[in-house]
Length: 208
Length: 208
DNA sequence: CAGGGTATCTTGTCGGTGACTAGTTTTTCT
DNA sequence: AGAAAAACTAGTCACCGACAAGATACCCTG
Image (cartoon, rainbow over all chains, first blue to last red; front, side, top):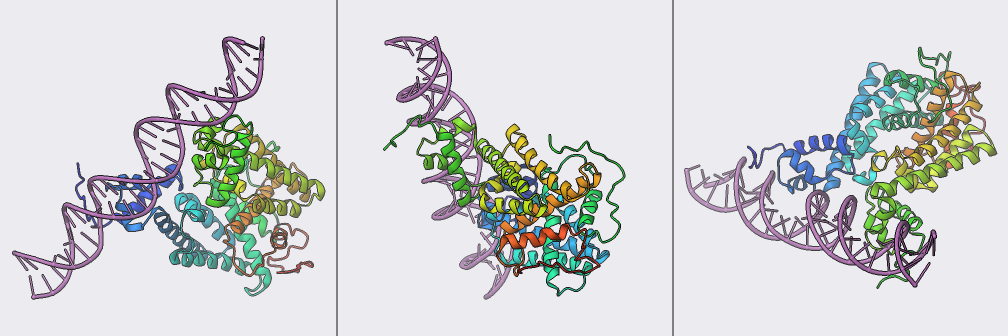
């Protein structure tokens, strides 16, 4: 009846977070229930609340973790190549690979967006994103850079959101990275615009 | 006890939708309850389900209405000026003016995204958005247009999402339209190509 | 190794919610 | 007017979040 380690197995917090990620991938961030997380972790229905206070506490922890994972991914991409496109691709890839985290992160009504961990992690992300833009443009101090950074961030975030929502038109193919690079190239098209991919050709007239 | 028109007041569907918009603005789309909508409309707790089937049905109706409102706004902006920036500004303005609709629209896990009304309304939006891009670029048949359209849509949607989430950095000011135009201009700077390796200046960079 | 203190988890409970069913009232159609 | 359909009410059940109180395991001191 009771599991092998009914109490104090020492990793419930981590187990609940992992269960939350799985559950969010299944039913979305708004439909997760603490009781379901408890069942998945093999503990009683009130155990998760002990570690997280309430439901928002769980999602806050997921959001903080997600922001940190994103900042890590962007930092790695930035240090490896330093190109804006690579950072952008890393952003999109993160959203696909960590869909649960990404979804929670952009639903501030579901968690405490003022949580210190969340704020700090978000600042890390912003810093890397703007660094990529600054490297592309002249200097990091121009007012243009701020606007350009917002534009770059908007483009990447918008593309990512629409992609994961499957709200983009068909005919783009399913190669996420290739499409993302094409789109990113539109923003910074300083030289020849070789936007034409290899394949694909759509009969236009979007929608269906 | 019972209100003046307990039954058949003839406009319950509309009343529930209006109540839903108000409630979503207050507590977010995931936290609305059918029972609360019923209370706001002055009917019994099960009345909304008669018209909408279930909770997702209400949100589906809100989403469809939102998509249609957005398509209307974009069409008006397109016909009036035809410039991409104007359409983009209309997109952002819609999200701010109809925040409840906009939020529901981009939470496909909360409603039936395959609903015919939703699909049709979304197609209208896509058409206007792509028309604005096609007018800006060469012809509507090039494969470039598809990518450019996705880029434009991504930029506008991403900026809008980040703005309403208040996730954009400070220092941009609070004039939504001015900031939006600055950002939109970054995307279509084919002739001037400011902001990239070649730095040029936007003559009407009004405020900041 | 005993015993107390504390962190961790369980059990029980309460109000609220979504969905369903059955019943009641109003409107509409003929 | 009378029947049929539409619109809404009332009741019920399982589930959920939050809270309170109790039980259990770990830890530390001695």
